[in-house]
Each structure stands twice: as structure tokens, then as C-alpha cells.
Amino acid sequence: MSDKLLFKDAEWDFTMLDRVFDAVEEIALNDLGLETYPNQVEIISSEQMLDAYSAHGMPLMYNHWSFGKVFAREETMYQKGHMGLAYEIVINSIPCISFLMEENTMTMQTLVMAHACFGHNHFFKNNYLFQQWTDAEGILDYLAFAKRYITTCEEKYGFEEVETILDSAHAIMDQGVFRYQRPPRLSDEEQMTRIRERLAYDEANFNDLWRTLPNAEGESAAAPDAMSPVETMVEEDKVRMKLPEENLLYFLEKHSPILRPWQRELLRIVRNVSQYFYPQKQTKVMNEGCATFVHHYIMQELHKRGQINDGALLEFLHSHSSVIFQPAFDDQRYSGFNPYALGFAMMEDIKRICEEPTEEDLHFFPSFAGTGKWREELKYAWANFRDESFIQQYLSPKVMRDFRLFAIHDSSEAPNYLVSAIHDEAGFRKVRNELARMFDIGQLEPNLQVVEANVRGNRKLNLQHAMHQGVPLDEKLRKKVMVHIERLWGHEVEFSTIDAADLAA
Image 1 (tube, one colour):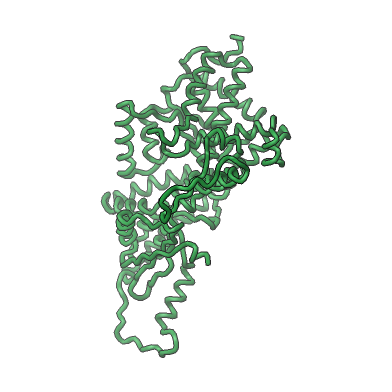
Image 2 (image 1 turned 90 degrees about the vertical axis):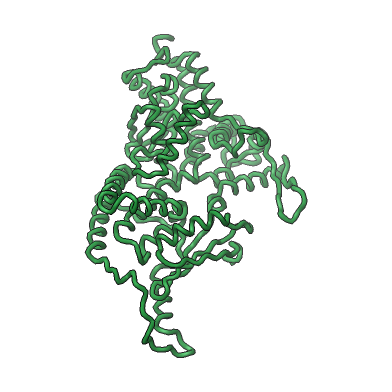
């Protein structure tokens, strides 16, 4: 058996990493049948890992003071022993780049290669949201361009000028994505060519007259029963700008009366980065669940094949059990559902339902219970669902019992909470619906839209918030964010709130 061992102790070198990677790859591709981008593995220090943490997990990210603030906080927490570091960071790109920490033992390097190089990699390549919204082939070149461009702007226009625009763009970054439209897919070369041409044109045609308010003196009065020429143009502008517009960064980038071409490009960079992370915000449970299931299966299979020893297996299980730990609701460590725990539990349960279904499973999941085809079912789920729909489709009564889930109805008009769903058939379906709604990004982020912009008159911009279930925006935070929107627009911004139900009607 010792002849088969890939390693015997905690120490590692690059030859050993290469040998272990091949063994992990063989199981991932030939046993699990995963489909991945080409892999690139990088070894980084703990400080570099902290640095990557602070910049949204992107080591190639442009510089901004907020990243340094996060770095200082995380470094202090890490040095005082109040937090640990991730064992890896993985980038959705071609090739898929996995950053492994040099302090990891050989067992942990094996685990994170299985987790990142094959679990996350497969999910990035195959899930429909990532296929629709991200350009894995061009993201690294684009980030390199963004970093160079922002550095050039700092040298040309001043550090504070650039920082001011980035501050405001970051303040509305979550409202800087297209949620329902598919952006045009351009090749990397076409994208860079378009950027260069757009900047050259904007610089050549920028006119300061756009900044001035029109003089209304001498305008002829419109007929009382007809729209004035100005009103007609306002309506035409509304159609031209395709209002209402949900992507605030896109609207300000295209239509702000005061921004210079280089400032518009900064907004475009922040918007593109926000769009890149949009699928990841909707697939935390699925993405981490997929990677955790994959690394768990591969590590167990390596042990069965005699390629890792009992000590390595125990070290792996200790780490794995910590990763999928779910604190109870009354535990001081509780901060919501652990996506690793919920995702892994559901995916292990799908495997169980396919192989050893109960009568309950056959009733709830007749399409795949007992088929034995758990690989096919998992790959289908990984490709075609996001967190909300995955939970709605696959959460089983067994997992609900394991997590002790039940539903509570909370009404501001009622003096007490009401337990609205327990562990019976109707209760299971209600709990599943309620839990799925908790992962609906439409309920987690405010629905803000530009509904009107008077670009020919007083330049007033009208923003509208569609309030969900009667919950308004936090007033202090709203006022702070409005300052940034007004800075980018350059004129008055009016804010209104309506009920989302009225908007749907």
C-alpha cells in the first residue's frame, strides 16, 4: 500500500504537487465526469492571500483605498488569531487560476486542488449564469487594462479626482448590473478596439456646452392643448434612453451631463467588474456545495485507492467538518446559513436519493429517485439552476429535518410570531418555498430604477425604489448613497418610493 501513496507527511514540493494533481484529475474527469477549463495553479503567501481577500478575491484588481481598509482589518484579525485564511482562491477565467497558500500541508494542497481546480472550475464552465454573464476568456486581460487605465488617470488627472469617482461608483456597485438583459458578447480584441475608439472619439468631441443649463428666455409658449417642443423632446429623450433603467452605473456612464470621457470609462470598469461577480452572488450555495462535494468525493476515493493514508484522511475530515459546520440559530457564531453546509448536504442527499431512496423520496422526487444516476443528476443541477431554484427543486424533507427547519410568519401588525409550517407534507413544501425566497437576489437587493431624466431642462434625475413587502430603504444609508449619485449626475436627484405590487399591477 505504501508504494501507492502520493505523499507520506505534511511537507510538499512542486514535483509532489504535480503528481497529486494528476491523481486528483484522473478521478475528477474519469470517475465524476467533470468538464473543466484548463487549470493554472499558483502558490502564494499568507500576506498575498490577505491582499487578494481585500480586492474581491482578484489579485489583479485595480487599487482603491477601500481594499486597503479591508486588508488592514483582515490582517489584524488574522495576526490576533481571531480568524483563519482561506486555503485557496480561484478565478473564473481561461485558464482557471487557483491560488494555493504556501503554508498549507500536502493534505490541504490535495484538498484545495480538488475543491478549486475541479469543483469550482466545473461549476464556472457549465453553469448557465456564468455562461450568460461572464467572459472567462477575457476577464484577465480586462482587469490588466483596468489597472493600467486607472493608474494612467491618476497620473494625468490626479489621485484625488480618480478616487472621488471610484468612491461614488463603488457606492452604487450593486445597482450597476444588468439583471434581465444579455450583454453583447465581444471577443477580447474587439473589446479593446472598441474601448480605444470610444475614448478617442469622446476626447475629440467633448463639449463644455453640455455642462450649461439652457436659457429659457425667448422660448415661444406652447398651445394649451398640446405638448410644447421641450416636452416633446423630453418624451423623445425618455424613449431614446430606454427608461426606466435598472443599471444606474450604465445610465450615469452614458447620460451624465458632467462626466468627462475618462470618468465615464471608470464607471464602465466598475460596472463590468460588478457584472462579473453577479452570477457568484446568486450561486453561493451551489458553487460552494459543488466544490465541497467534489473535494469530499475525491479525497475519499484517494483513500479507497490507497493513495493517501489514514493520517491524511483524518486531517482532511477535521478540516472538512469545520467547513460544513452550521451553528444553531441561538449560537453566538450564527450568521445565517453556511452555504458550504447547505450545499454539501443537499448534494450528498441527491446522491443518496438516487442510490437508496425511501418511500418519501419516491413521492417527492419521482423523476430521479432510485435511478442510480447521481452523477448525471448533479451535473444537470449544477448546469441549470441558481440557489433559489436549486433549493426549490431539490431540498428534501430529510435535509429539512437534519437542519431542523420550520417556517415562522412575522407580521408587524401581529403581537406574536406564528409558526406557519411544520414537518408534514404541506409544511415541507412551504418551508422549501420560504427558504428558496431567502436566496432570491431580487429580495436581497433594492429595486432602484431611473424613471425620468430631464436632460434638456433643469437636468433633474428621478429615481424610484420599488419597495418589497413594505420594507423601505434605510434612511441614513439612502442619504449617503444619494450624495454619490448626485455627484455623478451633477444636478438634482429626486427620490421616490412605491410598492412593488403596484408596479407589477
